[in-house]
Image 1 (cartoon, one colour):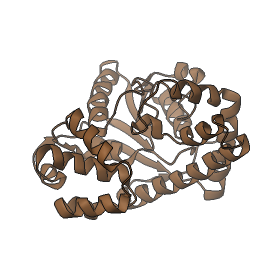
Image 2 (cartoon, rainbow, N blue to C red; image 1 turned 120 degrees about the vertical axis):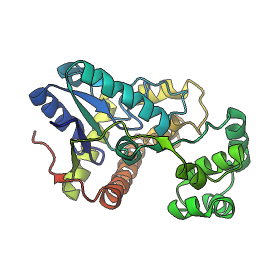
Image 3 (cartoon, rainbow, N blue to C red; image 1 turned 135 degrees about the horizontal axis):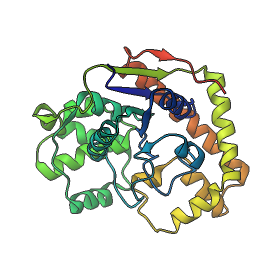
Length: 293
């Protein structure tokens, strides 16, 4: 008997629709595995399922985290384990769906036990590195944790800073912590896995249509409310695609057309990075086409 269903895929590929279709047919609960759809304030920007979809079948881990939170894969894995238990206790099939590859890796392979980084260490490093180029930070990481640095491209500033935080807080490289005993994967046994692999031109058209639809859904008001919270730009929620472009528009630095075009370009690039991850990190997952209309 299948213990869980895992659906990965790039943004705008129809993952949520497929998950809902399967949940309807198999009595499932759809559990979020997308790092931006967890944030309460990002309903439109993250393309979170709307009220119609949420009421169609049970959903879990959507919009349950305030934007003030520095959410992480470790926190998500803990929440996912509880969501898994809730679905099973209700006799429902757990259906994990999203585009965050690290979440699926943690779900199926577990996670190293890494001590939490004190807030003061994180804030000090953020101040020290704010105006430092990512390539310089990567060289700094190479000096103290060459193994981890070798796994991270110099352009991935967030992961570089995370590894530096761990070293500053513990005096041990992130690679060393990963070698120790960690959190076991909550999903094991008979798991049905799939990656949605749409045609590139079709996906780009979907991305364009979704960006245009955001305006009618009230994305400018959503971004205005988010900016009104006065949050640090280093928080994950503030790095959601669209925040910077629509902020620049609201400040008068971009026309609305330029902002939308920028969102489309950045989303296409993000989808390409997701597809690269799935191809390299999940090569044995069966590929499926997007769901029909």
